[in-house]
Each structure stands twice: as C-alpha cells, then as structure tokens.
Length: 114
Length: 113
Image (tube, rainbow over all chains, first blue to last red):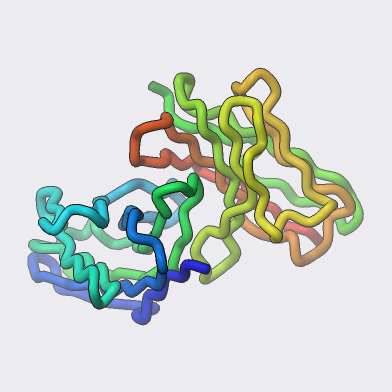
C-alpha cells in the first residue's frame, strides 16, 4: 500500500524568507502524481502545485517550487518570499496512475512571523 | 463556476442518530470523492463515484455508512447509528476526468455527543 509521510508537524518562517516542507512517500508504482495542498484555517483545501512522476523537471508555480527526487521518493515544497497569507496546513498527497483517490500525509502547520 | 458546496457546514447529533450530508460538485465534473479528516490528520479516502457509479470504497466505510450519487450530479453521505468516533470533518471533492486537480468543498463538521 502507498503511504505518505510528513515528518514536520510544525514549521515557522519569517516573512520574506524561504522555507522548505518535507514529504516522503512509498510506492511500487511507476506511474503516479504528487501534490501539495494548502488548507488555511477554517477554509477549504486548495491545490498549490503538482508533479507528474514521469517528468524529471521540478514543478514551479510562482513562489512555490518542488524538489522531486524520484529514486529517494522525496517530494519537498519550497516557499520563497513567504507571505503572511501562506500560513496554513500543508498536505502532501499521492495519487496512483490508475487510482482516483488521493493519499494524504498528516500535514505540516506553517506559521509565518511578521 | 461556483465551486464545490457542502451542506450542512456543521452538524451536532446525539449518538445513535442518523445523519445525512450533501455535496454539490462543480457542474461538469464527473468524478466525486468523499474524505474524512480528523483533528491533526490528513484527509482519508472514503469513497469515489464516476458519474452515478460508486467505483471504490475504503475499508473505513463501515456498513453504517452509505453514499449515493443519483443521476451523477449531487451526492449524499449517510451515517446510520452515529458513534462518537464518527466525529470528524467530512470533505467532498470533484474532478473532471482527464484532469489532475481535485477541487474540495468547505466540508461538513460532524460532532457526535
């Protein structure tokens, strides 16, 4: 069975600084997708960034980028120029190529200090 | 595009009562998912529909849980004989087949007293 592990329950970053959130996963599949979702307090979950396993190039979306290490089964999220609005729970998620559902990690609570 | 909506947003019920939640997906999305999220955890998959067909159910979905998606539009999740362990946030998400992103609703927070 596939698993997703986020080893950092909480992280803190100073406004305008850079922070990296860690995620590792376990799978025997070769075709899969990885995602980072953001869940602000009392608000709905939104997609931050995704990575297709067959792509070697790391995904980037504005201030958000990932470091995808397929052999190590690692998928970290880097947030540059952190803003107060980035404060939220961040969930790493996996979806197999033939699956429909997402498998989530336990999340990392990110605080941004002004 | 009005997004995924869920009703009610909050539900408090007594142990042993039945509850039903509703999810309205984004209109053209043919795939619909239910997840459960307890405090301090990530969402856990419960069940998944493609149009009106329920294609997959997690082992978390005990006999007390049932989900439907008549006509492939909105979906309902019913919990019979609720237990305190059912207290959680129930999330619904939808996706258009062939695309990557699941769009989540705001969730229904269930409290069983």
